[in-house]
Amino acid sequence: MNSSASRKVVVTGATGNIGTSVLRALAEDPAVGAIRGLARRVPDETPPKTQWSQVDIGSEQAPLAELFAGADAVIHLAWAFQPTRDPARTWSTNVLGGIRVLEAVAAAGVPVLVHTSSVGAYAPGPKDRAVDESWPTHGWPDAAYCREKAYLERTLDVFERDHPEVRVVRMRPAFLFKRESASEQRRIFGGRLLPGPLARPELLHFLPDVPGLRVQALHTDDAAEAFRLALGADVRGAFNLAADPPLDAGVLGELFGARPVRMPRSAARSAIAAAWGLHLLPASPHLFDAVLRLPLMDCSRAHEELGWRPRRTSTEVLQEFLAGMREGAGAPTEPMQGRKAG
Image (tube, rainbow, N blue to C red; front, side, top):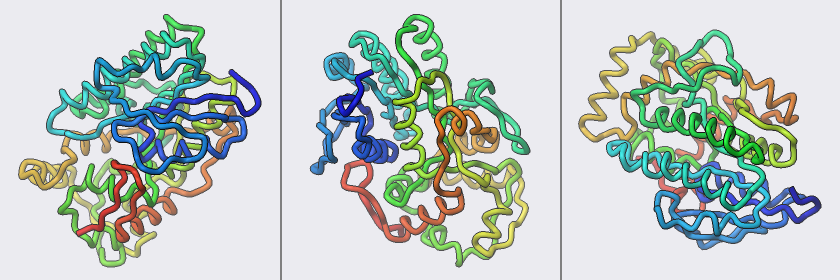
């Protein structure tokens, strides 16, 4: 990889939640001299050191190898969450598009690939202890998101075997939030009819305590810092990324002054399935099933080998995100457009 300030980095999905943070982190890195941001819709604003290219990785005609030529690294972030009701379309972008990215990395002779996997790639695991990166990545087969992330993990296994000259890093972050992503994530997961009080925790006197609903979160900017560090470190393989503490009804109840009330899984799932069936909720009950089964992640490897530590706790991340929901926060890219909650 080039030294000094001549490092050239290509970022797919550069206008989304992770992409906007990664571009900012790279622009502030003196070792990075040029950034090429790939996106389906090019924004009007251009960050420092960045050149935009309009491209859809889901298209067979996408000239990815040409765009990757001369790059020292590719950071693959592009991902389509919607339409959740048409898994063939998300498969085309996420899986087939991801395979095109790998093929283009090899064709262009790019020496480093940083791939965005997810906690969602992991097989069901424990909620009372954390697992390291050796935990199986079979996903939860009933949820398209997990299925697609797990499939790409297997594809990367083959890619690494066939292309040992490429240093491959797999980032497996927890749920990523920041103030600017609030409107986008509300549209993706909550829909336009998401009740406003959910963004004002002081109005919620009770919190549903569903067995298994214990997850990890991370600020998107903290995740972006791990991506940046991986470019300059001689590391390979997977890295878990998450902040403490794990979020459950007890932690949230204490944070927001609300009392946890036990709710059976079946009741919670039935409510989500009903809203899904009525097209009131864009996030499927299958994704809810997966969340209940995701393991907690041990991030020791990222701490020790990357020197990475999140600067914000998960509760600070959540407070910032909810404030963004109340304000209709966003960013000047098409996926991140701001819009106030109803």
